[in-house]
Length: 425
Ligand SMILES: [Zn+2]
Image (tube, protein in one colour):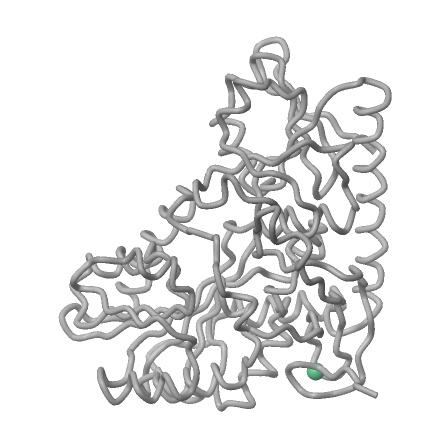
């Protein structure tokens, strides 16, 4: 029997929180010819009672997971702005112009590297396994490596370019199958007084705002500070500062150093305070997660009830907005079908003309809001709701409505000269 074990500590002392059933890979957009060969994998969320890690435990071959990544960070303005500010802030705090070297793990299409490249650093390197996105970086002062970041790759980079003063891994540290190997690589490549910074979705947002749509195969770990502290201490590293980040529906930035190094920076009170809060919220205990699963199920029932009512009572049409991994999880968990939803709109040209994994909804450009005038838009990219409302005022002013699925089901409309949000339960 193949016994499931915790990805961090190998313990079998784990507890099932949500079983999503067999689910297609969230990033695997496809064409109708590929429907018959589509593979689905079990997707189960577990909590480890020994090291407190919340995780997707089922293994999927990483070479299948990230073969053709359709997520182009630069397409999202909020992210572009965020990364520009990020690069300036961390450079000012930790790096020296003309001397410092920085490496980004999972650099995608270079949205952050471009910001670093403007700041007069000695070396700016990006590594990413996805060929189609990293190949779009053409700047001469950015070094790109099309590969997975591993201990072996870290060793080669160190031999060629020296140790890094800063390693950044934003929005990827939750996606790494062999996390031990990557962490060994970071430890090896980081200068003695260097800093490893990563931003990752915060478990508090997942729990409090019921963001279960953040759960998919590619997203393996859902981090609390309690779990991360335990994990890094095993590598002789420690988290010395944190910063809450509103982007991606509630992320946390963690600053990590080698234990006892980077002495000029004191341990932040925010770290101590967050740890206290997490213990209070029970993030080290199974009960908090079981309660969460129960609340998630209630939002599913409300959303399905609304979609059925629009179809059966109002006889109106619904289309989706934002064909992301999050949309795929929500669709598959709620089992939304083509009688409830017609197609999905997405602003990224690379996805248009493809179909969503598992559910096979066609993906169209935003222009269809004008040409086909659907009655309702179900906003899967609900964490960008303000940007989406602003971008589509014409649609709303023309009588179109939007559905926000989480953390509570709401209907957005334009009435009496202003935006109105109505709770549906
Ligand atoms: Zn564990």
